[in-house]
Image (cartoon, rainbow over all chains, first blue to last red; front, side, top):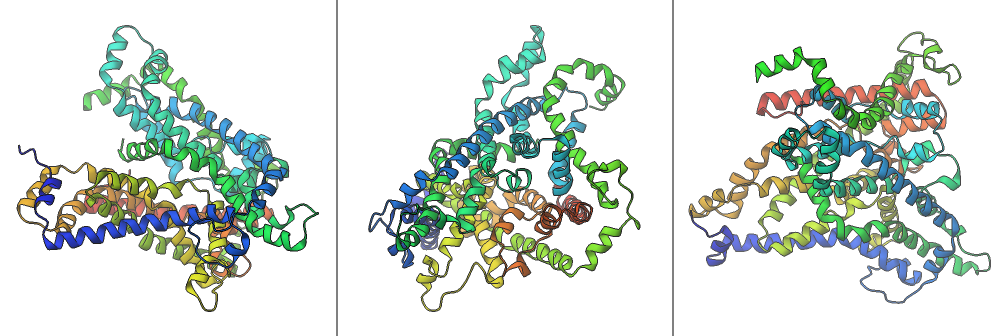
Length: 303
Length: 307
């Protein structure tokens, strides 16, 4: 077998057509990256820049004139921080509940010797394609008495069939059957095997699941609208919507400010709030993105 | 294989007893499935009843005629509008948003510098982490009358966010922005799995890059493409209603009212539970039928299916 890779060949002899392709392709990739990143970059810049410049509508590339009143006001705006606290609680509790539901079940479903495995798989896969829909779920939540509590945010989304399948695929390929057989000969029970051998082998899948579930919980909006009632229980996304999309940001400034400052501020506040609410995810993203790609790839392996 | 199957059936109970610990591990997930997935499915029968919240599902009387709420739905003009909007926006998404991650994956795969490739890929799925509220907020500030898009265009500002003619473009465009990188990961994985031998042979035969893509890359990832296509078609009626709802305003409901946003409004805001459930059920059934058909067609044509 020849050892040389195709890339080496290309370097040796680049035909005219392939060179054109390479230039064209690199250009597309750079343009795409800019289109993807620029809106996020723009919002961050706008949150620091004098609203007069932002409102002129010209594209921003750097902070032309620093204006920090937006962040000062945002920091002092208590309802936003209360919502922040709610979201953190919902996300932490929700992720833990989801892991308890998903990881053990994913492991069990990966075991080919489990009786009734096919049927159980179907029970979960089916939920991906058919559901009771908005109203019956809402009525269920009311009946259970969890309406307007944290559990209405956490329990209905505790299991995602897709994540369960990702988990199952991971255990199918990540925990060798020989290991199980060897452990069984030594008299290891299924519980022991799961907790003492399978779990320590699966830090990757736990990280992937944390990421998937935590992101979904952090970003929940519609469920809060449907299943929560009290303003002080609302998560960040609802408050964000009210402030930015329903234009309530102009009520945030203190009463002492002059009208002109208020108007100036109202525009900048929108950017500040968007940044503040998306910041945690963007901050952890670089560290967790490798798990993210891994998770999606595991999911692609059809089990 | 066959004899083991028979044995499993014979000793079914024995087997379950043997793997009882695995069943215990499944309890939390099964409880969830029963309470939050299957019990609400049972709750769908209120579409055929005059549901009263005080009486509960069982005691509420059957609707007369049984399909009263379905008839009611089809006799309202807004219903047909919502069905039409849902179908148009899904089909447009399928046509425009489905091929883009594939094209992106194929082109990214051709990038020879590994670090550059990795960088682009990492950047590409960053927007996937943004919530719909954040995305719609960004749209609303960037596409406003005095926003950056209008000022770059120059001339008379276009009211992108309130004009019905722009709703679908913004909706689908921002969807592509959000999900292109995420949806491409699967195709990139499939491309990486292609054996280098093929490229070697193609190179020796003097194939151009385009030919390599056309005759190696695309055929090799076709099973993945078909699989993803079935899944996409299977969710055709479940348009992301959260984003549509967030993008809705008084002036664009002609195009932005979808079956799901309509269900939310009549169901939860005006408490017409039976009626809204009937509308939702209609949506789910149509969706499920489309999924089964797509699955069967793919199975016949290419032997690839999800079930």
